[in-house]
Amino acid sequence: MNAFEKAFQKRIAAWDRHYGFQEAALHSVRAGGKRFRPKLVLLLSKALGTERTQSQAIPAACALEAIHTYSLIHDDLPSMDNDDLRRGQPTLHKVVGEGRAILVGDALLTEALGWCADAPSAETAVDWLQILTRAAGARGMVYGQWMDLAHQKKAELGADSVSVDLEKAIVKIHQLKTGALFAAVFALAVATVRAKQKPAIRTKEIRQAEALGTELGVCFQEGDDLLDISETSERLGKTAGKDEAQGKLTWPSLYGFYPASERLKKRQEKFMKALEKWLSAQTPKPTPQQRRDQLEFVQAIQGVFARIP
Image 1 (cartoon, helix red, strand yellow):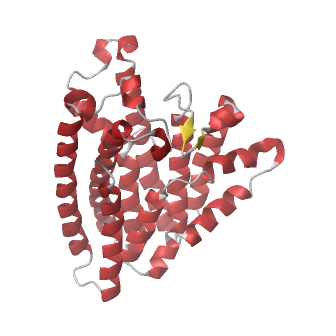
Image 2 (image 1 turned 90 degrees about the horizontal axis):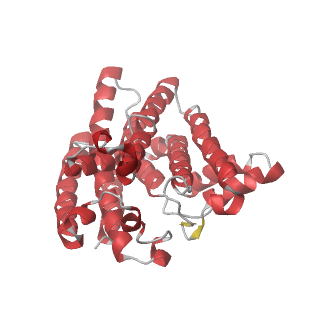
């Protein structure tokens, strides 16, 4: 991850220093965070390929983390989740104001395009752009956030504008708001490693990878909803108890904490079985190094699952 962190922060540090622009961006970029998404991109790029493909995937990992960081900046705004704390630090709009925080988010989203241009080939650059467009835009994260807000503000929007099937709505929100960026994790790695495959075959593998990544994202979001109840703000690095306070649509809000926790455990078990099957199909004859790398990838996911009650 050192190579990733160096590449990620170096690019942002090259932004103009005047008027506090660079400093504002670095406030969010250097605030820490788990870097879970780029870490998985790089681990998977190596587990399916080699150290070379892992190195080639660094710009993709940077692009994904830029999009994720932009989404957090915007998500924390008063007009959305209205949070004062992120990654254990004051949210950016509390430091520089709402307007400038929006612009930093805009800049990070745009910078992601520049990282895609650093792909090892033109074909891979196109794949990365298509993957991230699906994940971050109107077919992914942004629409998921729109649905999330709609259910918080359904009284304002009117009953007809919100689905009455709350279970289906929760699944859809989780698949898009969180699952879409995890879909990109898997897809970016596959696009990088399978760059020399025929386009039709590569596209099919990318879509299969996206489906599996989406499921991981759903598990991640369901776990996050439980942690919002069970953990303190200090441990979370963000304000705890926000979901209930804002009337968010979650499994705990529908069925209670413990039934939601049991539901998630079953979903995690199902995902881990699907992941094992997928990895075996991707590398029918793995080298000893690939076996070790795949184990590291799996353990990284298990580590996140283990901290969820």
